[in-house]
Structure formats: structure tokens, C-alpha cells
Length: 418
Image 1: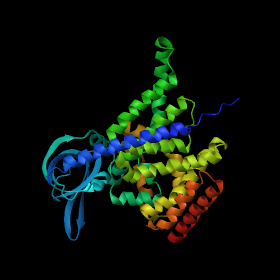
Image 2: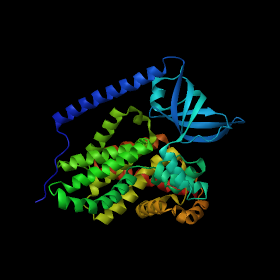
Image 3: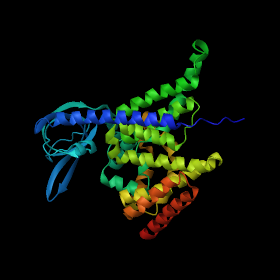
Image 4: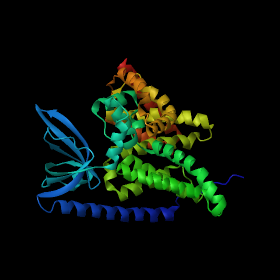
């Protein structure tokens, strides 16, 4: 007899959970506002920030450096002299002017006028790792591609456009898929040594629980190493919540689990509400769960193939609205998604062994043929698609309607680029 897993909330526990979310969110916003007021105490302030990216930009016949900073957990932009040495990965001291800074801008991430005061010589650990990866590649595009894949390093516009045209941007944005692959690798590495010691010294321990906790600790270190990027933070939190529920016999793959994760993370870190990466990550999981809600009885290989095709089509309206780029190679991202697991594992092992550039020739040849064309989706069409998708949680007919909208958009996009 198969036991049914317990639902996550009843009416009383749901009310208590929402009350807890309100208290957490209020506390988080109060903390953020306190930091904001401290920054605004005077019209200017001296702060320290880490340089995430440094690039040259020309606008209105003026050339200057653009610095993307991580300051108090937020993305901040400022400009400096074009002759400034590349500061990516370094900690800098700045005098900033905050008179016009609003609390909403502070939460969203903002541009700020500044003067550079000093630069600390030490590189951040993630930047050292990025440079070690880059040293195995001679081509700049390959350096940035693998830097993004393993260290979430920013990419130049040329590479972003090619990835958007190929429909593979989501494979480079570190999120739940990468976390899942790394977790499997860690479990494979930890299982044999753990079994050896368990059988001799602590046979009473719960093997799966301990292995999960070991993997989770390493994943937490990776999350800290990358600076709590939103998509990976969502994936890590959801992994912890999912295991907590599974360990207690509750439903894991459900919209309630996703909603719990989103509400809890948004309450703890209100800035996530304004993160596109966070919401793209949430959207991808939403469509996976929506597929499993109605088609979980299929065979495993059918589920794997179905999810790849389904998520591609259902995310396409969002992708075209945000990036406005499409090519005839774009639908092949379904195939690349299925092949990404062996590619990611092989690439990781090759970089560890010092042969990370092995695939560069093949990938560069593929990139040379990529050329995206303009193709976009109206906001009204996107909102219709998303609204019907939400209704599909409750009504299967809405699922079909949402699929037809996405399929129509895909056909139109192909027509536009041919």
C-alpha cells in the first residue's frame, strides 16, 4: 500500500505561517531602512564596496569606466575615469553622494555619484578562481563563458547576445540546475567514505540525512563564495525546504513548496523582489511543477523529455519579452538542456585537471554561426500567458490554453527570423 504524503498547510497552520512571514518581512524592512538612514545621515558618505565588474563605455562622445559594485548586498553602479586600471574583484573605498537616493532605489539597486578614495590590493576569492579558469582559455569569449558558468562572473554584451540567440542563457546563469548537478557529484564523492566510517564507528546514524547535510554545507560555502546570487539562493533555500518536508513525510513537489520558498526568501531579503534573476529562476521551477502536477505518471524518460520541451516553450514568451532576440538555433536549446548535465560534469573535471580549453574550438565555431534577430512579445500578451499559467494550477483547460499561447509565440518568432 502506497502512503499519501501529508499536505504542507491546513487552515490554522497557514494563518500562523503568514503571520510569521509578516513579522519577518517587517523586521527585514526595518533593518534595511536603518541601513538606508545611516547612509543618508549626511549628503555624502565614505563607504567600501566590492567591484563585481569593470568595463569601458562610450556615450554622447564621452568614454568612461563603469563599475558594478556589491554594497550591503545590493548591486550599485558608478562611473570613473576611462584610464582607471581594471578593478574587478577588488575592494574599493568611495565617497558617495546620497542626497537624491530614495529608499525604493536603495532596495532595487542604484546608480550613485562617487569619487574613488582607495583600492585594496587583495583580490576576492571568486576573482582568483575566475582568473584561474580564464588562464585555461586563449579566447576572451570562452574565458567569460566559463567564468559565468562556474563563478557567476559578468559577461560582455557580445557573448550575452549570442547566448540569447541560441536560447542557452539559462544554462550559464547559475541556479537550481547547477546546484542539483553539484549535489549529485558531492553525494557520489561522499557516499563511499561515509559508508566506510559508518559501518565501523556509527552504524546508528541516518546515512541519507548525514550525506545531505554534508552536501548542504558545501553548497552553502559555494553560495557564500559567489556572494549570494539570487537564483542560487532560491535554489539552495528550496533544497533545504524540500528535504525538510520530505524527511517529515510531507509533499515536496507542489506549488505550496514553491510559494513557501518565495515568501520566506522575499521576507528575509526584500531586495530579491526586484531581482530579475530570482524571478526567472522561480518561473522555471513553477513550470516544472506545473508539468509534474498533470503528467507525473509518465515514464521517467518521458518526464525528462517532456519537461525540457515544456519549460522551453512556456518560458519563451518571458525570454522574448526580456531579451528580444531569437534565431533558428533557439529551439535547439531543448537539446542543449538535455546534454548539459554531461557537458557540465566534463567541463568541471577538465578545469580541475587543467584542460578546460578542450571544447573551445568546437564552441567558437558554433558561436560564429549564431546571429540573433529582433523578436519580441507585447507586455499584454506576456501578462495573458502568465495569468493563464497561474489559472492552470487549478484548471487543466487553462493549461492547454497557456500552452497554445506559448506555441503560437514560438511559431511567430520562427516566422519573424526566416
